[in-house]
Amino acid sequence: MKRKIYNDLINWKNETDFKPLLVLGVRQCGKTFIIDEFCKNEFKNYKKINLLNDKEVVKLYASDVSSEKKYNDLKILLDFDFDKEDSVLFIDEIQVSEELISELKFFNEKHSNVRIICAGSLLGVKLARLDKPFPVGKVTRLYMYPMDFEEFLMAFDQDLLLNKIKSCFKNNESMGVTHTKAIEYYRRYMLSGGMPESVKALVSCKDDNYNYDLSILNNIIEDYMNDMNNHVKNIYETLKIKNIYNSLPSQLQNASKKFQYSVIETDAKSREYLLPLEWLIESNIVQLCKCVKKPEKPLLGFVDNEKFKVYYSDVGIFNRLVNNDIKTILLDDMKIYKSIITENYVANQLKANGLDLLYWKGLRDSEVDFLISTKNDGIIPIEVKAEEHTQAKSLKVYDDLYHPKYKIRISLKDFGYSSETRIKSVPLYAAFLINTLC
Image (cartoon, rainbow, N blue to C red; front, side, top):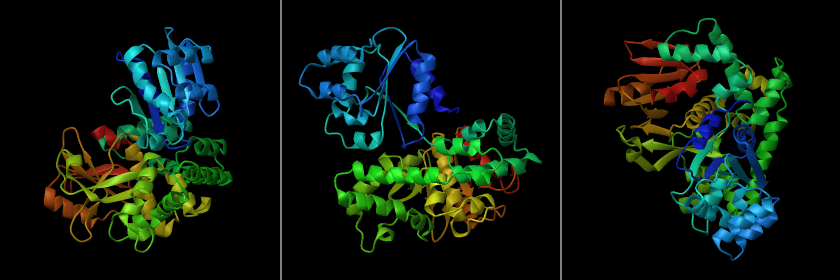
């Protein structure tokens, strides 16, 4: 299946200032597969190692010898001269060796001709908790996410539909009769989410969506739970991580419109949950959305650190966690969770396409779901609606206060623009295109 990150990998290969590449992302989002495909296709000489299996490499970098000796001995152990032109070394599960992560500085400073790509399970967590020095400024980071809706359509070979969506978004033109077909694919995406294994299983069902195997997502969730057991300091941290993770549906529905530690458990203190929450964020299992006090550029300069929301990194997993079955999703009968799951879906689309997740909270109950900083039009508010009914008091409150050039409403409605209300209507299936405005 095609992944847009492949273009980013090509850009890295074509850089003249060589730096080792760290690819970070939630477990099972397809990092190993796409890196392996890239290395096979784009380099003449390629070697892949996995530090969970290559214990001698881990032992080498834990030894007390010079960096140069480790560098030369690594070639011998691997029987691979990565100094050769048109060569690349892929180190998977690099989180196993803090020493090797730290030694990436040596690679960059002394052997900058060498192409090295590194990835790993919960690599973000490891980097946040390193005991060894991190090679600051000596590596390039690239973030990977579950497949967005554009990649989902590509997996189904829906290039014609995808091209029409892009054209209608750009020109504010109606999709006409094809709007219904795009909505059908959107429903299917809500079922599978963007995890490659899950999408592949849905593709194999062809048109029989009710034959989709929900156990795939159940297994991914179980793997996440196991990671929480195996990559934490103690059982108490594990329990806190799981408590936060399981509280998110309630968090997103609470009236305060922000994450509250008291929702996790009565009398919970923020200091007790800061590290477990950081673990979830660094693992990319969840995505943080920050509250902006004042919608001015730069938006990140006006963040209220006391207010934030937390979304699941994949909407398919969200639907599984609240036990929405195939019929419920495909027939659009999600009821009490529908609004927050739809909002979570949009958050995933924005994040996967390189946008910071930011929202605005005003007085009383006024809230705008997301804010973006555009190239030419300033700060633009985004309201998300799960239905065709699109009346939104909060968007009017925001408009009266800050007078944006226009507003975006993402819903089940077709594309369109009203010069009277200055609202650009964007169907839910086109949320992945919002970044083109920025």
